Each structure stands twice: as structure tokens, then as C-alpha cells.
Length: 230
Picture 1 (tube, rainbow, N blue to C red):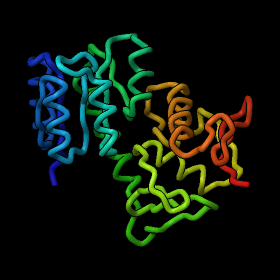
Picture 2 (spheres, one colour):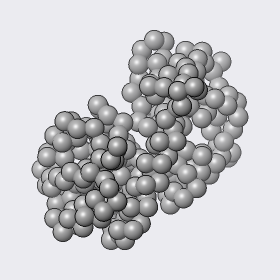
Picture 3 (tube, rainbow, N blue to C red):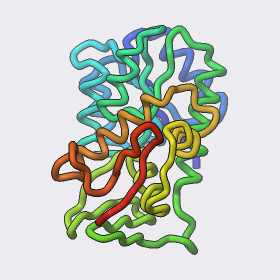
Picture 4 (cartoon, helix red, strand yellow):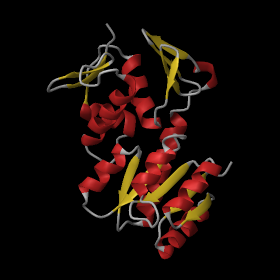
């Protein structure tokens, strides 16, 4: 089945170029030119990927990303200004999975999209291994990729779930930030270890009753992160 992508940018020439290139690879492409239109389309459709520009009319990309994250974990890649680290960090804070810096080479964009789609496919549990992981108060349903704490569902993004699943499957094993970046985001991911810190912080805000005194995801100072539940 063809992969479905939503491309959101107010520069119509950029949208046209990306759309043409992705359609050449057999993908189905929808387009939106402002934040409100993007949010409406994301609400009405299930996309394999959303390419979302930061600077948009009516509603900026961060707001769109944040609102999409209230109802969906579909992968979101932010298109951000060249060298603007704050945009990249903010994008991750609001729930983006990745970012691509403008100006970009369309071949790089296609490679990054395919890499993210491959990782998403690889992270889908096979039917024979579909299972639940129970660890104290936590239950991870690996087939539906849902998390329950004391029976109550907690909504996680795709990367937050991947991160928690890896840590829970290996209790008390300390992973360095570089290790987590490679294992969860992939060796070809061009981001840095701040990506891991942002996701751990967001994860703690969702699963910990007191994020500054975590019960599940702990920090080994100077080394990295690990899962333990006392």
C-alpha cells in the first residue's frame, strides 16, 4: 500500500517540488499551506509522515505539532531554518520526531523520510512477538503500542514509546545518551544527544507523578539513563 505523506509549507514552490519528488517514488501526497488547513487534514486522515514547516500563516508549526500530538502519534518532521538550534529543540519539545534544516536537498529529504518510515515499520511488533510487558505499575502493550500506568492509559509519541520500551526491557541497564540516540533514532540520525534529553524530560512529565524525583526513568549522573521501579 502506498505511503501517505502530508507536506505543509506556505511556499508553494517548495511544496510542489517535494510533492513531485515523493510521487515519483510512489507515495501519495497531500498538501497544506497554512497551520489551520494542516491541522484539519491531520485530523481527517491517517498519514505515514507529516513534513511540517515551522513558519506558517494562521497557526505556526509548533502549535500544529502540539495539537496533533493530542490525538495522534504519526511521525512529524519539522522543516526549520538553517542553523537555528532553538527551532530544532522547540520542535522536539512540542512532540516532533525529527527535523530537516532549510535549505535542503530533496534527495536528503527523501532519504530521511524513508529512514524514518523504515524505523517505524521495524518498530511495529511482529504478530508472533506481539506481547505486553508488565513492570510494576507499568504495562506496555507492544502490539497496539500503548502504555498503561495503574490501569490508566498514558498517551506517548512514537519515539517516547520506543525509548521507554527499550529501557523497560532492560531494567537497571544504564544507556548513555549516545547509545540511546543510536538505538532509538538510528545511526544515520544527524541530531545530537540533546534530542535524548528532551524526550526523557517529556516522557517523565507524562509518566512520573514528580518528574524531578522519578520513580521509573532514572539518571545515572555522568553516564546516562536507566529504568528501575522500586
